[in-house]
Image (cartoon, rainbow, N blue to C red):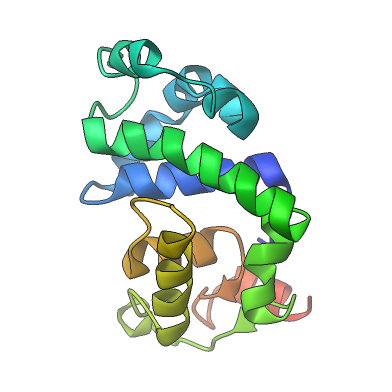
Length: 166
């Protein structure tokens, strides 16, 4: 579903980065833990986390305790705020990659859905230039799917038809 809410976009950015190398089931199971640990996914609050707070997060069993992923979530909050300031929001920045309208794909099977595309390669490269971490092309494509920049529901799914009308 298309997402334009800034907090939700930051939430998906954190969760997509945390999911790297893990199953979605693992991350979904820990989603509430992330919500508590990362201040309700408020990037302004997370951007103020210091080294002591990061160390406390690394002891929290309700999240994935990977130092690089936790540190990335904090530094990404700072980069996120910078993008908000420069572009009038993270949503306008992100949605500019698809000219404000979701890409409508027509995959017939799950095996047809790519893990990355030229567009996710470009988004990844641009985010890295802006200081974001854990934003490889595959993570960016997952983010694009999660926030509705691309409609990758297979054509037999009721959601595909529903989202194609938007």
